[in-house]
Image 1 (cartoon, rainbow, N blue to C red):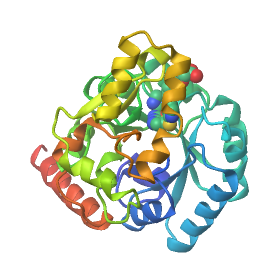
Image 2: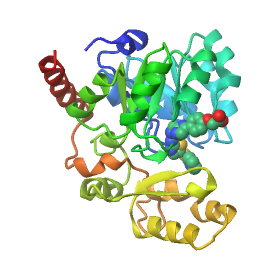
Image 3: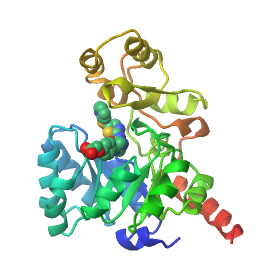
Image 4: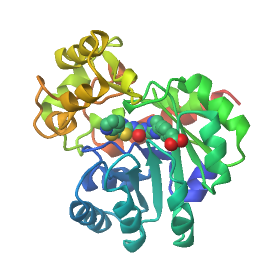
Length: 309
Ligand code: TUI
């Protein structure tokens, strides 16, 4: 499937892996790149020496292009912005903010820059700032989200900008990929589907929560902090929602959630972990190797899109 995204990124399938904090490390990124997509290493709030090590490991595990996601709210965003230049990383995606101040240096270094945006206004601003492509991320996604759905957001962003658009949020099989293409996207970004892959090194408890999730097992907490976050509806996530409904302050809320991503991903701590995950988890029933996931999804999508011609 050749699109503007496969051309821009020199990859086989128009697929990028979500930059999931604590989850997206070298093993998963290399597997996605080796399968023909673009794997990503997530900066999250990880120490810079660890990230340098992950980038170098990834280079050893694949000769294909891969990228780094810079989470702009992270305290180390500035250092990571420089690290990707120093390490010659070919693609950067950004989330949770406006990457404008890094854009000139990244472009100068020949890096392809793909900001993740939750609205048309931000999409237009990023195009003006020199982005090469955009990820239009619907509220079905896991983690920090905007309010608009993939179905509504993607065609509006496609109509508003000239650069290629990658759809994200609620896509986990060939039907979702074909639908995104019909909305005008030139590629897709998937996160949740890769949580249930063999190469993803999250705690087994996390994988089991994904496999066991139903359509209604997704919850959004933290709306009142200005940083709404989608996760699996565990007892802990429900208690956060009760806390905000009963008048807890945003500062108290932030204190309650500090360290909860690590507790989920590394420790598998069901009582105190935030298991960030998209609303599509209910459709995922099996752990498979990344290559099998990618090939199955794209042969299904290609057949559907062929039929639609
Ligand atoms: O960034 C994400 N997803 C994430 S980041 C994350 S880690 C986190 N930890 C604690 C609180 C919040 C997050 C987990 N998941 N997706 C991309 C995304 N970007 N979603 C929304 C946005 C966004 C929001 C505002 C992009 C730009 C933006 O700009 C505001 C501005 O500065 O103009």
